[in-house]
Image (tube, rainbow, N blue to C red; front, side, top):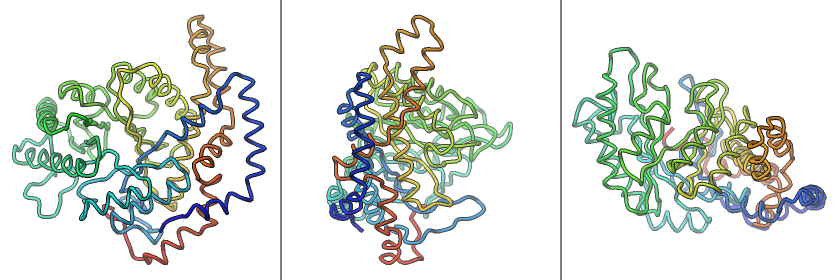
Length: 426
């Protein structure tokens, strides 16, 4: 399915007048404060978030999974769904493939399809947390950290294969997330597991092209509950430093213990030039993988405030890889992703409103109240007219959810694909 410009323009037409009124009011208010509205809109338009190929079907838990029908059953259909998201939001201009769930059969055809939808290929993701069909070795007791050299070599080779696949598509990064760890005390020797992981990552790193990044993700628990080999950003940073200057830490919002100060983590990593990527989601209890901004929108804003500061003041840190990593258990996956994209853009826009020079002066004066007022003034601003303007100028929908529903996208997908398709990898 492909959404045409005429369809989007039709859905926009009835709301153009009220949008312009809202935008003019906000634009005038911000201009009086010295805000360069045009620059913020340009930055919003340039900010693109990758959609993971595994997130285009219904999610699930260990208790069950409920389909929304019309799910993409092939890589081609997944890319078409990303095209729908990008057409409506104009901020989903990349897809992040998970291997071996989404190995292209015809690389040229896949690249042509993605290009026709203005979609690029972001980081490729390896999978050593599941045993694959016909695999000689099992990852039941770990992959890159396993006590068995044969298992480690199989996991290393898989990551090298993923790099080669990404290279053919134009990707520029490999993301490694490990489920390795232990469920019970004494099960693993912590030092041995960490050393094995370090040696394995260094072996993978040798195959990283010069213009690529190795992104090392971390997680404190799950699926192992006593220990995780790469449990926090410190462990990830140590491993990245051991690998070399093309290796970086990747931050997933759900991969922290409750009440972790994530904004401080990303700030320090940027200062050290070692923040490579970001996975967006939200949570109430743990790695819930909920819609971005649905639970802790102020925390997301504070994180973006540090990210914006770092992007302006830390040239030693590379451009970041942005991706959504969520599970849509009770929502239409495409609607959930649209909501997440909107929340990300909203937090980013609010962070761009923060007067960093004024904030710095208040910090130097130890004016705690003024510091808080500066942040909360930006956070309390309704920036949705800016987001709508950014989309409108690029041909997107003023209200992506409203357009998605008025165009009856889900039913069109069901008619095209049927009710029995299941997204690969789930």
